[in-house]
Amino acid sequence: MKRLQLRNILLLLALMLATQLPAQTTKWRDIHKVKKKETIFGIAREYGITVEDLMTANPEMKQPDYQLKKGDYVFIPFAKEPQPQVPEPKQTPVQQTPVDDVRQRAIRLGVMLPLHDENGDGRRMIEYYRGVLMACDSMRSEGISVDVHAWNLAENGSVEVVTADPAAARCDLIIGPLYSKQMPALSKFTEKHDIMLLIPFSINTPELYSNRHIFQVYQTQNDQNEQTVRHFMRLFGGQHVVIVDCNDSTSTKGPFTASLRRALETQGTEYNLTSQKTSEEQFQKAFSATKNNVVVLNTGRSKELGVTFAKLNGLKNTNPNMQITVFGYTDWLLYTNAHLENLYKFSTYIPTPFYTNQFSPLTNRLQRLYRQHFHVDMQPVIPRFALTGFDHAVFFLRGLHKYGKTFNGAAGMFGYQPVQTPLQFERIANGGSQNRFVMFVHYTPDHRIETVKF
Image 1 (cartoon, one colour):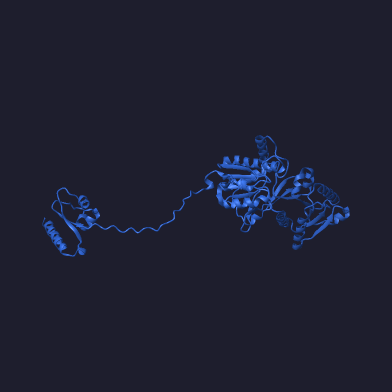
Image 2 (cartoon, rainbow, N blue to C red):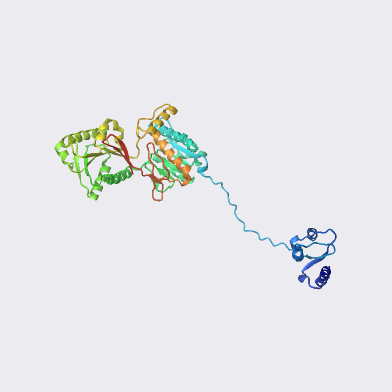
Protein backbone atom coordinates (compact mmCIF):
# COMPACT_ATOMS: atom_id res chain seq x y z
CA MET A 1 0.00 0.00 0.00
CA LYS A 2 2.80 2.37 0.83
CA ARG A 3 4.35 1.53 -2.51
CA LEU A 4 1.21 2.67 -4.31
CA GLN A 5 0.98 5.91 -2.38
CA LEU A 6 4.61 6.72 -3.07
CA ARG A 7 4.12 6.05 -6.79
CA ASN A 8 1.12 8.34 -6.91
CA ILE A 9 3.12 11.12 -5.29
CA LEU A 10 5.86 10.66 -7.83
CA LEU A 11 3.33 10.86 -10.61
CA LEU A 12 2.02 14.16 -9.33
CA LEU A 13 5.54 15.55 -9.08
CA ALA A 14 6.23 14.43 -12.63
CA LEU A 15 3.13 16.22 -13.83
CA MET A 16 4.14 19.41 -12.05
CA LEU A 17 7.61 19.29 -13.52
CA ALA A 18 6.25 18.60 -16.94
CA THR A 19 4.18 21.77 -16.90
CA GLN A 20 7.29 23.86 -16.10
CA LEU A 21 9.41 22.53 -18.99
CA PRO A 22 9.38 23.67 -22.57
CA ALA A 23 6.86 21.80 -24.67
CA GLN A 24 9.45 20.08 -26.77
CA THR A 25 10.95 18.38 -23.66
CA THR A 26 7.64 17.15 -22.23
CA LYS A 27 7.60 13.34 -22.11
CA TRP A 28 4.03 12.72 -21.02
CA ARG A 29 0.88 14.11 -22.49
CA ASP A 30 -1.13 13.57 -19.29
CA ILE A 31 -1.46 11.54 -16.10
CA HIS A 32 -4.69 9.68 -15.83
CA LYS A 33 -6.40 8.72 -12.58
CA VAL A 34 -8.05 5.33 -12.94
CA LYS A 35 -11.79 5.19 -12.37
CA LYS A 36 -13.86 2.21 -11.31
CA LYS A 37 -14.11 -0.56 -13.90
CA GLU A 38 -11.67 1.14 -16.33
CA THR A 39 -9.38 -1.10 -18.34
CA ILE A 40 -6.05 -0.64 -20.02
CA PHE A 41 -7.73 -1.05 -23.39
CA GLY A 42 -10.37 1.55 -22.58
CA ILE A 43 -7.84 4.11 -21.36
CA ALA A 44 -5.70 3.66 -24.48
CA ARG A 45 -8.74 4.11 -26.70
CA GLU A 46 -9.82 7.22 -24.76
CA TYR A 47 -6.53 8.96 -25.47
CA GLY A 48 -6.15 7.65 -29.01
CA ILE A 49 -3.07 5.61 -28.36
CA THR A 50 -2.28 1.93 -28.62
CA VAL A 51 -2.24 -0.48 -25.71
CA GLU A 52 1.42 -1.10 -26.50
CA ASP A 53 2.17 2.65 -26.18
CA LEU A 54 0.39 2.80 -22.82
CA MET A 55 2.17 -0.26 -21.40
CA THR A 56 5.57 1.04 -22.61
CA ALA A 57 4.95 4.28 -20.69
CA ASN A 58 3.91 2.25 -17.62
CA PRO A 59 6.30 -0.75 -17.50
CA GLU A 60 4.67 -2.27 -14.41
CA MET A 61 1.67 -3.12 -16.58
CA LYS A 62 3.80 -5.77 -18.26
CA GLN A 63 4.30 -7.68 -15.00
CA PRO A 64 2.40 -10.99 -14.83
CA ASP A 65 0.63 -10.09 -11.55
CA TYR A 66 -0.28 -6.50 -12.49
CA GLN A 67 -3.88 -5.37 -11.88
CA LEU A 68 -5.28 -1.97 -12.83
CA LYS A 69 -7.15 -0.51 -9.82
CA LYS A 70 -9.37 2.48 -9.10
CA GLY A 71 -7.36 5.51 -7.95
CA ASP A 72 -4.13 4.48 -9.67
CA TYR A 73 -2.31 7.08 -11.73
CA VAL A 74 -0.92 6.08 -15.11
CA PHE A 75 1.22 8.04 -17.52
CA ILE A 76 -0.40 8.93 -20.84
CA PRO A 77 2.21 9.25 -23.61
CA PHE A 78 1.82 11.36 -26.67
CA ALA A 79 0.42 9.47 -29.60
CA LYS A 80 3.09 8.53 -32.04
CA GLU A 81 3.06 10.61 -35.15
CA PRO A 82 2.51 8.46 -38.19
CA GLN A 83 5.67 7.85 -40.19
CA PRO A 84 5.63 9.64 -43.51
CA GLN A 85 4.82 7.21 -46.25
CA VAL A 86 7.62 7.14 -48.78
CA PRO A 87 5.98 6.54 -52.12
CA GLU A 88 7.24 3.41 -53.80
CA PRO A 89 8.84 3.83 -57.19
CA LYS A 90 6.27 3.69 -59.89
CA GLN A 91 6.57 0.45 -61.78
CA THR A 92 5.18 -0.55 -65.09
CA PRO A 93 2.67 -3.33 -64.47
CA VAL A 94 3.98 -6.67 -65.68
CA GLN A 95 1.59 -8.67 -67.78
CA GLN A 96 1.19 -12.01 -66.08
CA THR A 97 0.81 -14.53 -68.86
CA PRO A 98 -0.18 -18.00 -67.75
CA VAL A 99 2.43 -20.60 -68.60
CA ASP A 100 1.31 -22.30 -71.83
CA ASP A 101 2.99 -25.67 -71.52
CA VAL A 102 2.22 -27.89 -74.49
CA ARG A 103 2.94 -30.89 -72.25
CA GLN A 104 -0.14 -30.07 -70.16
CA ARG A 105 -2.71 -29.64 -72.94
CA ALA A 106 -3.72 -30.77 -76.41
CA ILE A 107 -0.98 -30.32 -78.99
CA ARG A 108 -2.05 -27.93 -81.76
CA LEU A 109 -0.95 -29.38 -85.10
CA GLY A 110 -1.29 -27.63 -88.44
CA VAL A 111 -0.91 -29.27 -91.87
CA MET A 112 -0.25 -26.97 -94.85
CA LEU A 113 0.06 -29.17 -97.94
CA PRO A 114 -1.70 -29.52 -101.33
CA LEU A 115 -4.70 -31.51 -100.09
CA HIS A 116 -6.71 -31.96 -103.27
CA ASP A 117 -7.51 -34.55 -105.94
CA GLU A 118 -6.40 -32.51 -108.94
CA ASN A 119 -3.00 -34.13 -109.59
CA GLY A 120 -0.46 -36.59 -108.25
CA ASP A 121 0.97 -34.13 -105.73
CA GLY A 122 -2.42 -33.60 -104.15
CA ARG A 123 -3.27 -37.29 -104.03
CA ARG A 124 0.09 -38.17 -102.47
CA MET A 125 -0.27 -35.44 -99.85
CA ILE A 126 -3.82 -36.55 -99.02
CA GLU A 127 -2.41 -40.00 -98.31
CA TYR A 128 0.34 -38.45 -96.21
CA TYR A 129 -2.24 -36.41 -94.28
CA ARG A 130 -4.31 -39.53 -93.65
CA GLY A 131 -1.22 -41.13 -92.12
CA VAL A 132 -0.89 -38.09 -89.84
CA LEU A 133 -4.53 -38.54 -88.75
CA MET A 134 -3.90 -42.22 -88.01
CA ALA A 135 -0.96 -41.20 -85.84
CA CYS A 136 -3.10 -38.69 -83.94
CA ASP A 137 -5.67 -41.39 -83.34
CA SER A 138 -3.04 -43.83 -82.06
CA MET A 139 -1.62 -41.19 -79.70
CA ARG A 140 -4.84 -41.18 -77.69
CA SER A 141 -3.90 -44.54 -76.16
CA GLU A 142 -0.76 -42.85 -74.80
CA GLY A 143 -2.74 -39.99 -73.28
CA ILE A 144 -1.69 -37.50 -75.97
CA SER A 145 -4.44 -35.24 -77.30
CA VAL A 146 -4.04 -33.47 -80.63
CA ASP A 147 -6.02 -30.58 -82.10
CA VAL A 148 -5.54 -30.79 -85.89
CA HIS A 149 -6.07 -28.01 -88.42
CA ALA A 150 -5.45 -28.61 -92.13
CA TRP A 151 -5.20 -26.14 -95.01
CA ASN A 152 -5.05 -26.87 -98.74
CA LEU A 153 -1.84 -25.07 -99.70
CA ALA A 154 -1.73 -25.86 -103.41
CA GLU A 155 1.20 -25.13 -105.72
CA ASN A 156 -0.12 -21.69 -106.61
CA GLY A 157 -1.66 -21.11 -103.21
CA SER A 158 -0.82 -18.15 -101.02
CA VAL A 159 0.88 -18.74 -97.69
CA GLU A 160 -0.34 -15.34 -96.50
CA VAL A 161 -3.97 -16.28 -97.17
CA VAL A 162 -3.61 -19.57 -95.30
CA THR A 163 -1.80 -18.07 -92.32
CA ALA A 164 -4.41 -15.30 -92.02
CA ASP A 165 -6.58 -17.90 -90.26
CA PRO A 166 -6.16 -17.15 -86.51
CA ALA A 167 -5.82 -20.89 -85.84
CA ALA A 168 -2.52 -20.92 -87.76
CA ALA A 169 -0.72 -18.63 -85.31
CA ARG A 170 -1.81 -20.83 -82.39
CA CYS A 171 -0.16 -23.98 -83.76
CA ASP A 172 2.69 -25.66 -81.90
CA LEU A 173 3.82 -27.54 -85.02
CA ILE A 174 3.13 -26.99 -88.70
CA ILE A 175 3.86 -29.65 -91.33
CA GLY A 176 4.55 -28.19 -94.76
CA PRO A 177 4.94 -26.85 -97.33
CA LEU A 178 5.50 -29.20 -100.26
CA TYR A 179 6.84 -26.54 -102.63
CA SER A 180 10.12 -24.73 -102.01
CA LYS A 181 8.81 -21.41 -103.35
CA GLN A 182 6.42 -21.23 -100.38
CA MET A 183 9.20 -21.66 -97.82
CA PRO A 184 10.26 -17.99 -97.33
CA ALA A 185 6.80 -16.82 -96.28
CA LEU A 186 6.06 -19.83 -94.08
CA SER A 187 9.50 -19.65 -92.50
CA LYS A 188 8.92 -16.01 -91.48
CA PHE A 189 5.49 -16.86 -90.10
CA THR A 190 6.71 -19.73 -87.91
CA GLU A 191 9.66 -17.71 -86.66
CA LYS A 192 7.41 -14.81 -85.72
CA HIS A 193 4.95 -17.00 -83.80
CA ASP A 194 7.47 -19.46 -82.30
CA ILE A 195 6.07 -22.47 -84.18
CA MET A 196 8.05 -25.59 -85.05
CA LEU A 197 8.04 -26.22 -88.81
CA LEU A 198 8.46 -29.75 -90.17
CA ILE A 199 9.34 -29.84 -93.87
CA PRO A 200 8.40 -33.39 -94.94
CA PHE A 201 9.72 -33.51 -98.53
CA SER A 202 11.16 -30.26 -99.91
CA ILE A 203 14.98 -30.15 -99.98
CA ASN A 204 15.62 -26.66 -101.44
CA THR A 205 15.45 -24.74 -98.18
CA PRO A 206 17.96 -21.89 -97.70
CA GLU A 207 15.94 -20.82 -94.64
CA LEU A 208 17.22 -23.94 -92.85
CA TYR A 209 20.50 -22.13 -92.20
CA SER A 210 18.93 -19.20 -90.33
CA ASN A 211 15.60 -20.32 -88.81
CA ARG A 212 15.97 -22.50 -85.72
CA HIS A 213 12.31 -23.50 -85.87
CA ILE A 214 12.80 -25.59 -89.05
CA PHE A 215 13.13 -29.38 -89.15
CA GLN A 216 13.96 -30.74 -92.61
CA VAL A 217 13.48 -34.47 -93.19
CA TYR A 218 15.23 -34.96 -96.54
CA GLN A 219 18.74 -33.87 -97.43
CA THR A 220 19.98 -32.50 -100.73
CA GLN A 221 21.45 -35.06 -103.10
CA ASN A 222 24.96 -33.79 -102.39
CA ASP A 223 24.45 -34.22 -98.65
CA GLN A 224 23.08 -37.73 -99.18
CA ASN A 225 26.04 -38.62 -101.37
CA GLU A 226 28.54 -37.40 -98.77
CA GLN A 227 26.82 -39.33 -96.00
CA THR A 228 26.57 -42.50 -98.09
CA VAL A 229 30.22 -42.36 -99.15
CA ARG A 230 31.32 -41.86 -95.55
CA HIS A 231 29.36 -44.88 -94.34
CA PHE A 232 30.46 -46.92 -97.37
CA MET A 233 34.09 -46.34 -96.42
CA ARG A 234 33.40 -47.38 -92.83
CA LEU A 235 31.70 -50.60 -93.90
CA PHE A 236 33.85 -51.65 -96.84
CA GLY A 237 37.21 -50.10 -96.06
CA GLY A 238 40.05 -52.36 -97.23
CA GLN A 239 37.88 -54.33 -99.67
CA HIS A 240 38.21 -54.27 -103.45
CA VAL A 241 35.82 -51.87 -105.22
CA VAL A 242 34.68 -52.39 -108.83
CA ILE A 243 32.81 -49.53 -110.52
CA VAL A 244 30.75 -50.68 -113.51
CA ASP A 245 29.92 -48.25 -116.31
CA CYS A 246 26.40 -49.11 -117.50
CA ASN A 247 26.37 -46.70 -120.46
CA ASP A 248 23.22 -44.95 -119.19
CA SER A 249 23.17 -41.44 -120.62
CA THR A 250 20.21 -40.53 -118.38
CA SER A 251 21.93 -41.52 -115.13
CA THR A 252 22.12 -39.09 -112.22
CA LYS A 253 24.54 -41.25 -110.22
CA GLY A 254 27.72 -39.70 -111.60
CA PRO A 255 28.19 -37.34 -108.61
CA PHE A 256 28.02 -40.28 -106.22
CA THR A 257 30.56 -42.45 -108.05
CA ALA A 258 32.83 -39.41 -108.46
CA SER A 259 32.69 -38.74 -104.69
CA LEU A 260 33.33 -42.41 -103.98
CA ARG A 261 36.39 -42.48 -106.23
CA ARG A 262 37.82 -39.41 -104.50
CA ALA A 263 37.32 -41.00 -101.10
CA LEU A 264 38.97 -44.26 -102.23
CA GLU A 265 41.94 -42.40 -103.68
CA THR A 266 42.31 -40.26 -100.55
CA GLN A 267 42.36 -43.39 -98.40
CA GLY A 268 44.71 -45.18 -100.79
CA THR A 269 42.20 -47.97 -101.50
CA GLU A 270 42.58 -49.76 -104.81
CA TYR A 271 39.58 -49.86 -107.14
CA ASN A 272 38.98 -50.85 -110.77
CA LEU A 273 36.73 -49.55 -113.52
CA THR A 274 34.97 -51.77 -116.02
CA SER A 275 31.96 -51.71 -118.34
CA GLN A 276 28.96 -53.86 -119.12
CA LYS A 277 30.07 -53.88 -122.75
CA THR A 278 33.45 -55.51 -122.12
CA SER A 279 34.08 -59.18 -122.81
CA GLU A 280 33.75 -61.75 -120.03
CA GLU A 281 37.54 -62.03 -119.89
CA GLN A 282 38.07 -58.28 -119.56
CA PHE A 283 35.22 -58.02 -117.08
CA GLN A 284 36.85 -60.66 -114.86
CA LYS A 285 40.18 -58.82 -114.81
CA ALA A 286 38.57 -55.98 -112.86
CA PHE A 287 37.88 -58.32 -109.92
CA SER A 288 40.10 -59.56 -107.10
CA ALA A 289 40.51 -63.28 -106.49
CA THR A 290 41.57 -62.79 -102.84
CA LYS A 291 39.47 -59.90 -101.52
CA ASN A 292 35.74 -59.33 -101.34
CA ASN A 293 34.66 -57.36 -104.41
CA VAL A 294 32.17 -54.54 -103.82
CA VAL A 295 30.41 -53.79 -107.11
CA VAL A 296 29.03 -50.27 -107.67
CA LEU A 297 26.99 -49.34 -110.74
CA ASN A 298 26.71 -45.81 -112.11
CA THR A 299 22.96 -46.10 -112.71
CA GLY A 300 19.85 -46.80 -110.69
CA ARG A 301 17.75 -48.27 -113.51
CA SER A 302 16.33 -51.79 -113.39
CA LYS A 303 17.37 -52.81 -116.92
CA GLU A 304 21.07 -52.10 -116.33
CA LEU A 305 20.88 -53.82 -112.95
CA GLY A 306 19.57 -56.95 -114.64
CA VAL A 307 22.42 -56.91 -117.20
CA THR A 308 25.01 -56.53 -114.42
CA PHE A 309 23.53 -59.41 -112.44
CA ALA A 310 23.75 -61.59 -115.58
CA LYS A 311 27.47 -60.78 -115.97
CA LEU A 312 28.10 -61.42 -112.26
CA ASN A 313 26.36 -64.77 -112.46
CA GLY A 314 28.59 -65.72 -115.40
CA LEU A 315 31.63 -64.66 -113.37
CA LYS A 316 30.55 -66.78 -110.38
CA ASN A 317 30.00 -69.79 -112.60
CA THR A 318 33.63 -69.75 -113.69
CA ASN A 319 34.95 -68.55 -110.32
CA PRO A 320 32.69 -70.10 -107.66
CA ASN A 321 34.94 -69.01 -104.77
CA MET A 322 35.02 -65.38 -105.80
CA GLN A 323 33.42 -63.12 -103.17
CA ILE A 324 31.06 -60.47 -104.56
CA THR A 325 28.90 -57.86 -102.85
CA VAL A 326 26.71 -55.39 -104.73
CA PHE A 327 26.14 -51.83 -103.48
CA GLY A 328 23.19 -49.99 -104.97
CA TYR A 329 20.73 -47.10 -104.77
CA THR A 330 17.39 -46.30 -103.14
CA ASP A 331 15.76 -46.58 -106.58
CA TRP A 332 16.36 -50.32 -106.49
CA LEU A 333 13.73 -50.73 -103.79
CA LEU A 334 11.20 -50.25 -106.58
CA TYR A 335 12.34 -53.43 -108.33
CA THR A 336 13.13 -55.76 -105.46
CA ASN A 337 10.54 -58.29 -106.62
CA ALA A 338 12.09 -58.48 -110.08
CA HIS A 339 15.64 -59.00 -108.78
CA LEU A 340 15.06 -60.49 -105.32
CA GLU A 341 17.03 -63.73 -105.78
CA ASN A 342 20.07 -61.91 -107.14
CA LEU A 343 19.84 -59.30 -104.37
CA TYR A 344 20.12 -62.14 -101.88
CA LYS A 345 22.75 -64.06 -103.80
CA PHE A 346 25.13 -61.09 -104.09
CA SER A 347 24.64 -59.83 -100.52
CA THR A 348 23.29 -56.53 -101.79
CA TYR A 349 23.33 -53.30 -99.77
CA ILE A 350 20.92 -50.48 -100.64
CA PRO A 351 21.43 -47.06 -98.96
CA THR A 352 18.14 -45.38 -98.16
CA PRO A 353 16.57 -42.84 -95.78
CA PHE A 354 13.46 -45.04 -95.48
CA TYR A 355 12.50 -48.68 -95.73
CA THR A 356 9.13 -50.43 -95.64
CA ASN A 357 9.27 -54.01 -94.43
CA GLN A 358 6.17 -55.49 -96.03
CA PHE A 359 6.40 -58.52 -93.73
CA SER A 360 6.30 -56.41 -90.56
CA PRO A 361 3.14 -56.98 -88.44
CA LEU A 362 2.93 -53.23 -87.75
CA THR A 363 3.14 -52.39 -91.45
CA ASN A 364 0.38 -54.87 -92.24
CA ARG A 365 -1.81 -53.59 -89.40
CA LEU A 366 -1.49 -49.97 -90.56
CA GLN A 367 -2.29 -50.96 -94.13
CA ARG A 368 -5.44 -52.73 -92.91
CA LEU A 369 -6.46 -49.74 -90.78
CA TYR A 370 -5.90 -47.40 -93.71
CA ARG A 371 -8.19 -49.54 -95.86
CA GLN A 372 -10.86 -49.64 -93.13
CA HIS A 373 -10.79 -45.90 -92.49
CA PHE A 374 -10.48 -44.56 -96.02
CA HIS A 375 -11.84 -47.46 -98.15
CA VAL A 376 -8.83 -47.50 -100.47
CA ASP A 377 -5.37 -49.07 -100.39
CA MET A 378 -2.16 -47.08 -100.02
CA GLN A 379 -0.58 -46.19 -103.33
CA PRO A 380 1.97 -48.84 -104.44
CA VAL A 381 4.92 -46.43 -104.41
CA ILE A 382 7.97 -45.87 -102.24
CA PRO A 383 7.93 -44.46 -99.77
CA ARG A 384 4.38 -45.27 -98.69
CA PHE A 385 3.13 -41.75 -98.04
CA ALA A 386 0.65 -42.72 -95.34
CA LEU A 387 3.40 -44.52 -93.43
CA THR A 388 5.65 -41.49 -93.85
CA GLY A 389 2.96 -39.23 -92.39
CA PHE A 390 2.39 -41.69 -89.55
CA ASP A 391 6.09 -41.81 -88.63
CA HIS A 392 6.56 -38.04 -88.83
CA ALA A 393 3.52 -37.31 -86.68
CA VAL A 394 4.25 -39.95 -84.03
CA PHE A 395 7.86 -38.77 -83.69
CA PHE A 396 7.01 -35.08 -83.19
CA LEU A 397 3.85 -35.56 -81.15
CA ARG A 398 5.66 -37.81 -78.68
CA GLY A 399 8.56 -35.38 -78.58
CA LEU A 400 6.36 -32.37 -77.90
CA HIS A 401 4.38 -34.26 -75.28
CA LYS A 402 7.54 -35.29 -73.42
CA TYR A 403 9.81 -32.28 -73.85
CA GLY A 404 7.56 -29.41 -74.94
CA LYS A 405 9.14 -26.76 -77.15
CA THR A 406 12.64 -27.86 -76.08
CA PHE A 407 12.28 -31.00 -78.23
CA ASN A 408 15.01 -30.98 -80.89
CA GLY A 409 14.66 -34.42 -82.47
CA ALA A 410 18.17 -35.54 -81.53
CA ALA A 411 19.11 -39.20 -81.15
CA GLY A 412 18.19 -40.86 -77.87
CA MET A 413 15.50 -38.43 -76.67
CA PHE A 414 12.97 -41.26 -76.58
CA GLY A 415 12.57 -44.72 -77.98
CA TYR A 416 10.55 -45.03 -81.18
CA GLN A 417 10.71 -47.86 -83.68
CA PRO A 418 9.61 -46.27 -86.98
CA VAL A 419 7.41 -48.12 -89.41
CA GLN A 420 9.26 -46.74 -92.42
CA THR A 421 11.08 -43.44 -91.87
CA PRO A 422 13.71 -43.14 -89.12
CA LEU A 423 14.37 -39.61 -87.88
CA GLN A 424 17.48 -38.28 -86.16
CA PHE A 425 17.97 -34.53 -86.39
CA GLU A 426 21.14 -32.50 -86.06
CA ARG A 427 21.40 -28.73 -85.73
CA ILE A 428 22.83 -26.94 -88.76
CA ALA A 429 25.14 -24.19 -87.40
CA ASN A 430 22.85 -21.48 -85.94
CA GLY A 431 19.89 -22.49 -88.05
CA GLY A 432 17.38 -25.31 -88.07
CA SER A 433 17.79 -29.07 -87.87
CA GLN A 434 18.19 -31.69 -90.58
CA ASN A 435 17.48 -35.40 -90.46
CA ARG A 436 20.86 -37.17 -90.74
CA PHE A 437 19.66 -40.74 -90.39
CA VAL A 438 21.00 -43.13 -93.02
CA MET A 439 20.65 -46.90 -93.20
CA PHE A 440 21.73 -49.62 -95.56
CA VAL A 441 19.16 -52.33 -96.30
CA HIS A 442 21.06 -55.61 -96.57
CA TYR A 443 19.76 -58.64 -98.49
CA THR A 444 21.74 -61.50 -96.98
CA PRO A 445 22.71 -64.72 -98.82
CA ASP A 446 20.63 -66.71 -96.31
CA HIS A 447 17.52 -64.86 -97.52
CA ARG A 448 17.13 -62.38 -94.69
CA ILE A 449 16.63 -58.65 -94.89
CA GLU A 450 18.41 -56.61 -92.24
CA THR A 451 19.08 -52.92 -91.79
CA VAL A 452 22.47 -51.44 -90.95
CA LYS A 453 21.76 -48.14 -89.17
CA PHE A 454 24.16 -45.23 -88.79
